[in-house]
Image (cartoon, rainbow, N blue to C red; front, side, top):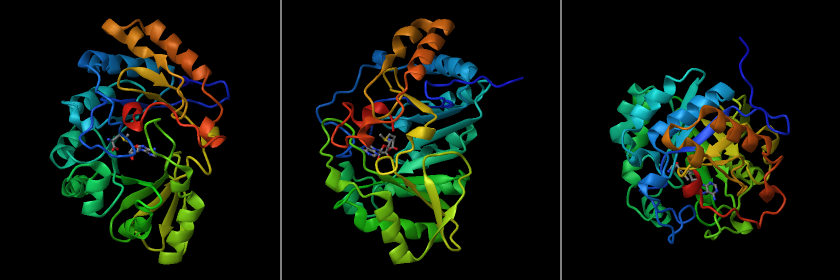
Length: 330
Ligand code: SAM
């Protein structure tokens, strides 16, 4: 029969949820984590049962795509069992994962067997020393091994997400782009967003999509636009003959709010209709103890109905949302 449709107040269909399974992370990226933040008690974090109940409700409303994120999702035990169970929920057709890759080498096979096929790995530098400076941890080799294992196991596509920050890693645009000449990787450059009051973000550090594309084309030749396989936020390009793709997520300079189809759920169970707005709805309260299907659905509908037309940072880039990305779920 007809698929259910969850629609917001601006006629956008919401079909995609990003769920943070933990606020904990094994890296301490300077721009993503707040040194004064203390992790929540286990009781405050959504249990796997609560996540499954939530996804069941979302699926009946019209959500068909789930991404698991964090914190660092792979630090939560038995993530593979959660993936298997989400995959069994009627109506869910796509599950993906965003990870920093530190634990991926050992977990890639079990994630694959659980049914995961798509994976995004965050990596902001190809330089080991710089990796230590950005993340506070000497795990570059582990991430590289994680990426190699993901490719060998057969995940497709393997996407590498790099947040481009002027003066930090923008000198590596070409090095990242060159990886697409050799590997079937999707390198996705992300514009640096003003997230987290504790962050040192400044507009001067944002490298826009236009500048990135110009610098890559100047160094490596013309970029051919490529049609995206799914309706994601990245615009895709290819260097002639390359097996990989180059994508840019221009959340600041060319935001894609008009086609936004997603909502987010933080590890402590707050539904955020927009990444860059602090408007949140307390799902944890209604999910507690199994949760009443109708109440959960009503809260989701209420949150989605009020989803803003466009994020506030598009109009006022100096404004930062309160939470750091590590506690929202990127
Ligand atoms: N630990 C996982 C990882 O590293 O992919 C998942 C969570 S992490 C918060 C998700 C993504 O958010 C990372 O790629 C990170 O670089 C990105 N991120 C954090 N703060 C950001 C910001 N201010 N602007 C753009 N992206 C940001």
